[in-house]
Image (cartoon, rainbow, N blue to C red; front, side):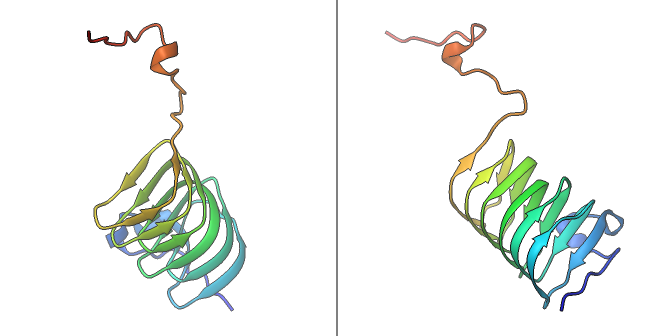
Amino acid sequence: MFKWKFGSQKQSEGVQPEHVTAILEEGVEFEGKLSFQGTARIAGKFKGEILASDNLIIGKGACVYANIEVNSIVINGEVIGDIIAKEKVEILAPAKFKGNIKTPSLYIEEGAVYEGMTKMDSPKQQPLIANNPTVKPRLEV
């Protein structure tokens, strides 16, 4: 059995209470496919797949084993799986993340653990220096 709690959020994780639309509470375990609108917060245990066009917060003490595709994600707990974030990924201490990340913006706070590979694509995909006529490489002789 799982329980959703609507309209509640701890201020300590940088999101105002009125902005969180769903919470998977601490002590709750859920397995499956999760999709949502707005910002969701996971504080319990989740295993499966998370797909949403909005934002996800993984709370301290949470254990998430999932492939995740969201707009942005803030990780405070433990996550194992791959992440695709359209806007940004933030890994805050004491978080532990193991997996691959694809995002245009990545922030890892000192004290957080990250093991994996990252692919960062800018939204405007600038050409490499060698292929960009506006950038002149410096040659030292």
